[in-house]
Amino acid sequence: AQKVTQAQTEISVVEKEDVTLDCVYETRDTTYYLFWYKQPPSGELVFLIRRNSFDEQNEISGRYSWNFQKSTSSFNFTITASQVVDSAVYFCALSEGRAGNNRKLIWGLGTSLAVNP
Amino acid sequence: DAGITQSPRYKITETGRQVTLMCHQTWSHSYMFWYRQDLGHGLRLIYYSAAADITDKGEVPDGYVVSRSKTENFPLTLESATRSQTSVYFCASILGQGWSPLHFGNGTRLTVT
Image 1 (cartoon, rainbow over the protein chains, first blue to last red):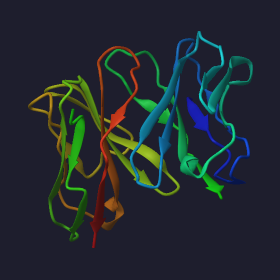
Image 2: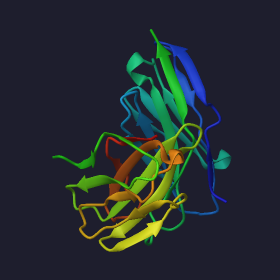
Image 3: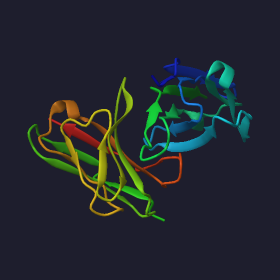
């Protein structure tokens, strides 16, 4: 069965520390997509990144970087030099099966990150 | 660019009442979704729709009804609200091409007393 595990329920860091949020997934599909979303305290859900299973290149966007490793079924998210504005709940998600008429995602339970000044 | 709009933002209703949560998107996205978010459960899919007049159940559809007569609207109705349906509800949409990212509305916080 497909599954996404975010083992870290809560993380607390001090500003300027680097922090890595783990995401481990299970799937039988050979083609799949992984996503990260951010939910700040204001409550909206914001898309951060999408990665397909054929692209294992790491992605960097400013202070954010993502490490996709198929060998360990992980898609980890690192924030470098964290800031208070990074405080949020972060969700990892996995596409379920072939697209077709289905666009359902399998969601992790989220990691709540608190960045303290 | 209004995007995807949910209304109301907050709603308090009583057990047994019918309540409808509205979702409207201006992008002409094919797919629309309703999720509920609860502590300890993350995001759970209630219903989704691939196009007008095409809807399908998600993980937790019991007690909910949806319709999609127009591409841009996807209302969610709780036919007889229960306290267990107290939650934050998110509507989302995507283009119909492959696994596009979801675009979420701002959510509706529903309390059933």
